[in-house]
Amino acid sequence: MSQMVPDFSTVPAGAIVAPTPFTVDIPEAALEELKTLVELSKLPKKTYENTTTEKYHGLTRSWLENAKSYWAHEFEWDAVPLVLIHGWPGSFLEFLPLLKLLKEEYKPATLPYHVIVPSLPGFAFSDAPPLKRDFDLSDAAAIIDKLMIDLGFGGGYVAQGGDVGSKISRILGSKYSSCKAVHVNYCYMPEPAKPLGNVTATDLEDLKRAREFKATGSAYALEQGTRSSTIGLVLSSSPLALLAWVGEKFLEWSDEKPSLDTILESVSLLSLPLEGVWKLGFANSEKTFNSTNHGAQFVAEYYIRKPFGFSSFAKEIAPVPKAWAATSGDLVFYRRNERGGHFAANKMPEVLLEDIKDFVTQVWTG
Image (tube, rainbow, N blue to C red; front, top):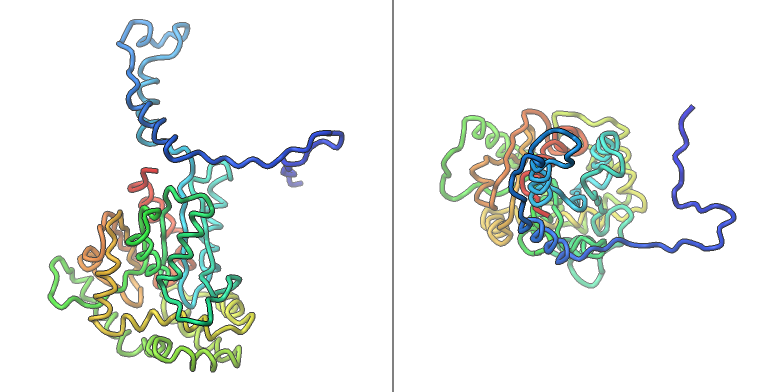
């Protein structure tokens, strides 16, 4: 028989005073002041009493010294705000396996992250963008940043994403002060005009596959990027048409094939209601990368001058060498995973989560 989890918000039936909600909101300045005071606090000189292990003398100096160091340099008052940003043809559903792992590993009181998984504008349950003008990745990034600030994370958060989500994360990291670090598992960028050093034999094999994909598998991006309204109208007219268009991507873009249920869940979310015009039109961003000049301009404009991490998965559709990724931001974390492809959060959640954990541990200072 399972144990019932008590609802700590329930008051006794005979209570005559109703509790009122209270939100903990500690100003960042107060936390910085506390950290400074801890660092400036002096330890007492060593004495027989504070160095002996005999319990009746009380606390030892060594314990206090270790506690001070941990408090000043490692302890976090709160969990790390982490926003996970999906792409196309994904949705928030692609992060469910990763969230399940967190739920299994931690209790609410020990979870080291505030995990926010928003639906991008026009996707799933989010409102559609305005009809009076074009709406691009910069607009989506502005909304995500405002969301994080409104949730109380204006003091800092980490952005993570793949596919379109990686591009939005890049914009957040380069343009918004509240985004303190960026981790991506997709780092598409055009081939540099001049060869870069430190490109390995494995990198060359990856690049060969990337060129094959561009030649034989990227027609969808050209269509969505240049005729988004037309393809959106076509696919919105039939769920089977959308299934064929999207299902192909799920089946081909990873070495870990998704189940039919996984594909149908995502396609159903895209189909209900049939707003495929926008959901495909969002891939307008792809047109930015159809030429080397435009792609290079995007990468240069959104160079990440903050801690930047990149997890490369062996069967990604557009893999890039570490040497290339390092030219697009202050790369402080890189890891190549020998399995997995485009949908890493869904098909390789254990591996991606471990990479995210290691990156956050390395770069987060609160």
